[in-house]
Length: 92
Image (cartoon, rainbow, N blue to C red; front, side, top):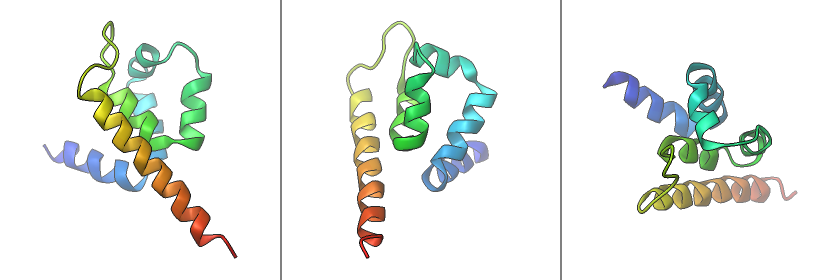
């Protein structure tokens, strides 16, 4: 229970670190979700929340179905908000 809460708190603050640690601990999640190494690398750099959520909700053999897409879309919006917020802060 405590590790789940710690994982959630760390993923909000440090999504790239959580992606890296998850890749080290469970590389089969990434192998099942992505057929190529290029897409997770780009996701690590450009959209870490979306990549993390995609890996977490992906079901091998099924893919994403139903409410899984909602979580991926919410992570995408969070990524866009983070990118937009940093762009707004660096406008000067």
